[in-house]
Amino acid sequence: NGLKEVLGGLGTIAAIALFFASPLGSIFFAVTNSLFLLAILLPVGAYVAFQGWQFFNTISGPCPNCGAPATVLKDTTTAPSFCFNCGTVLQASSDQTTIEFANENTVVDDGFS
Image 1 (cartoon, rainbow, N blue to C red):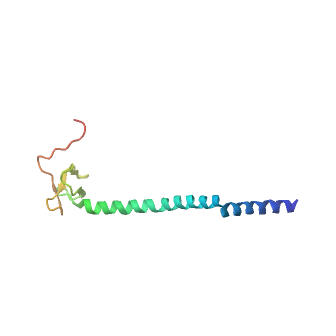
Image 2: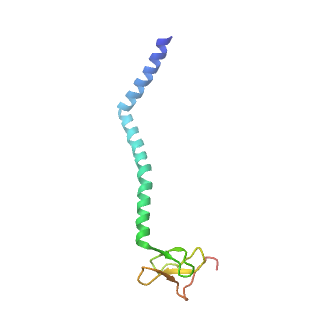
Image 3: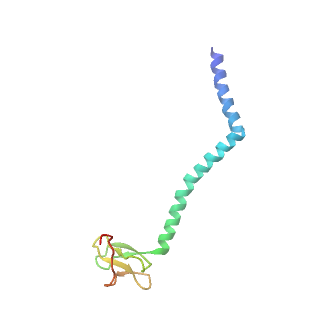
């Protein structure tokens, strides 16, 4: 009876070893390793890409009205940004180094009108 249990365990180990030694086991390893690599590299790559985009396309600085930290897009043709503290409409300066008040004729489309 004890020999039967030992042989059952050895048989299972042998079957698993043969599976991974076969071409089907290689495919299993390839798919599993690819998914694992994707799960590790995709978030890291997305984080690095977003940080690069943010560095090249936004300006951070104090709000000219209340002094709270604010971030605006460098592209002045898009909709202006808002200060989350006081609600002032902000945009990048013409030299794209500082934050300034948006022009008086700037139209803000809230999507409700």
